[in-house]
Amino acid sequence: MLVLGIETSCDDTGVALFDSDRGILAEALHSQVAMHTRYGGVVPELASRDHLARLSPMIVRCMAAAQRALHDLDAVAWTQGPGLAGALLVGASLGSSLALSLGIKGLGIHHLEGHLLSPLLDDHPPAFPFVALLCSGGHTQLMLVQQLGSYELLGDTLDDAAGEAFDKSAKMMGLGYPGGPAIAALAQQGNPTRYPLPRPMLRSGDLDFSFSGLKTAVRTKLASLGVRADDEESIQALSHVQRADVAASLQAAICEVLVSKSMAAMEKTDQQRLVIAGGVSANHELRRQLKLACERRGFQLHFPALKLCTDNGAMIALAAAMRLERGEGLQGEELARVGANVRPRWPLHGLK
Ligand code: KG4
Ligand code: ZN
Image: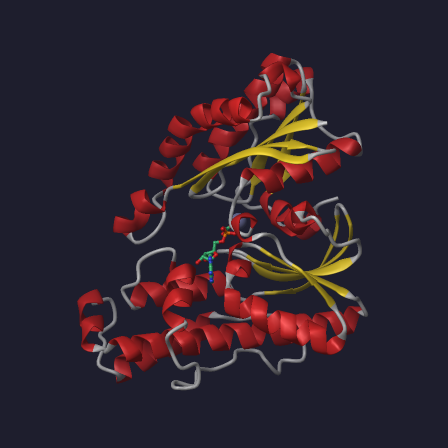
């Protein structure tokens, strides 16, 4: 089965051509980071317009790279939600129109399901069931995944996601957006024990998270070092070593909580396989610590290839191929009627 996957939920335009027998045949990705960076975050209207301008040429390029024609496609899939409404609409309108014009199936996919299943694109994919730590920009969740469409929410963040703690702290430190990669790079040169920061909810006894206090703790620490809130220039008062130490201390606090809760989830559910996915799973320190913790307990750990951690079209095409095999997908009149409907807010555990 040949599926075209389209991802436009936020600030990455992703396209991939996926063959259920042969894997990813071609992929294209455009990050809008450079365009949004001077605003300090994603500007939704600019994001939608950019997706619109880039999507069609990227699809044409992908088809050409795989030496396939549009009429070879069996289905088109797009991200239906959650995400920015306007950005989602671009992928859903183009994807459903393309499927309609070709007379094939079209399918809207849950963005987080795409992330969750992305480790299945690996040469050594995990078998079901597994526990998944989903760590994207807006979500930090632990899920028990029994099979496709069976997602039991074990724990969730009560406020900010881990990605937000990275992003908001990076902004305070004048590191721009997105903050995760910038903090991770700076942390490599820092001392993670220099500024002890809180480990929120570490001993709460449940599997929930809370990261907004951590962001406040970073703000307080920076203030005690002479940095004024919302005055990005005052960060210059800190030495490079101090900045690196704050970054390393923040990363250490986030990693410790994520690792500890993931291990607790494995034990509570009596599972053997842990999967991490979403943008934050690109973090090397988190991968290293999770690997150690899993090895110590005899658990298997699976994570997506680095390029598949953040948003991409391949994870959408894969999730779609799996759902199409179950007989899902819209066609004809129904596709025309509801294909372009998007769901900016859409909890994963409601999915079937
Ligand atoms: O999954 P994703 O690409 O987009 C969403 O669906 O939200 O995740 C983006 C998030 C951002 O918060 C970004 O700062 C974070 O992933 N991120 C990282 C790293 N790379 C991306 N966080 C920590 N370390 C990284 N290396
Ligand atoms: Zn994502």
